[in-house]
Amino acid sequence: MPKTVKTPAAALNALMAEYNLNVHSLSKGIGLSPSAVRLLSIGKSKITVSTALRLGKFFGKTPSYWMDLQKEADLIEAGKDKKLAAAVNRIGKAKKNVAAPKVKAKTKAKIKSKVAAKPKKKTTLRDKRKTAAKKPGAKPAARTPAAKAKSAAAKKGTRKPAAKKAAKKAVRKPAASKKAVKKPVAAKKAVKKPAAKKTSARKPRAKKA
Image (cartoon, rainbow, N blue to C red; front, side):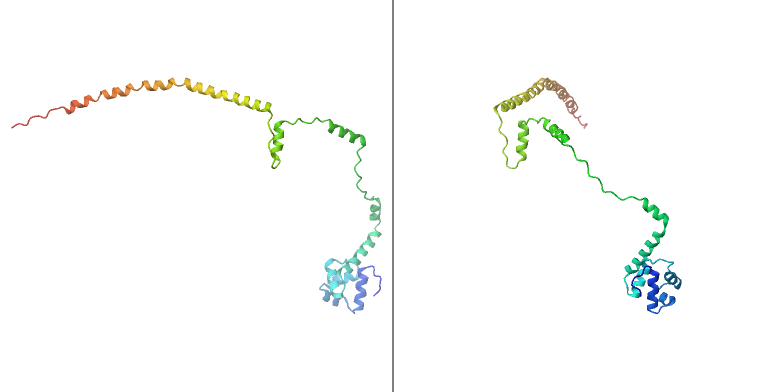
């Protein structure tokens, strides 16, 4: 067997000569039809994955050996095609993605000045209490005398509507006196009782002897 084999057909013919095999005996050995084996030996049919597995098992070679031979043969045939070669020559090379443009120092300074120009919010007592409450184990902020006076005045202002409600309830009391006037109606019903006594006062008639 020659050392350098370019086509799979030449490699197959060399192995068939080494093992004294013909088309029929090889077709029985690998489980293909004689016509398929004949086309492989001539070079008119390409070696597929299934045929590579069959030939590799029969001749004791790896399937990649037969697939590599087929790849080399395909590349040689493609190089002979002029139209394909012209189309390949027109294709340019891929370029790496260009890095993003760097920000100028002036624009960075403008951004920093805008951030610095933003006024900070004033922190009130409520904000301080909220932040103190969020911290674990923190004590509530102490109230100032002015804040205590404001809270006391607010509480007094809220109590005034309660006095108005009490005044409204006092105004509604005459409605109860109207209900008390209806009591003499029950007294009239009690006057009718003597009428029932007249029926029960009848004397029994004396029996005839």
